[in-house]
Image 1 (cartoon, rainbow, N blue to C red):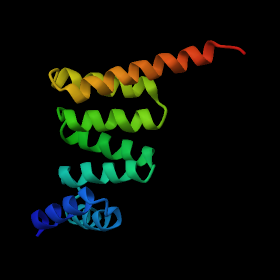
Image 2 (image 1 turned 90 degrees about the horizontal axis):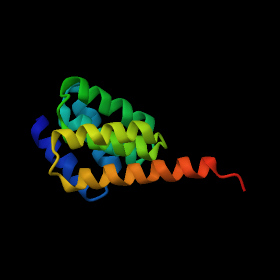
Image 3 (image 1 turned 90 degrees about the vertical axis):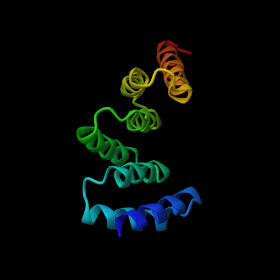
Length: 128
């Protein structure tokens, strides 16, 4: 059943057996396209495969179904950050931080995104 395959998919993901995890999560999503846990892991797998645009689309779909999931907002922020979309990453991290202001990891992601954004802006203004 789906619950057992989710557990097995998480097991594969945690052990960096990404192809096996992807196969299971894809099977689950064929049967249950709005399975939030499978979608979240699918997004993580897209990030692992450097498919940031796909990860962003998956996380947006999850947020359409559950707009108050701080983990998904944080993951979306990471996908935007890796995709070099600093303004959108900051917006996603800020939303995650609003939902759970005491989460230190989210606070750290937000701070790093601000620093990266400032560094990029500074580099754009420099003319060697």
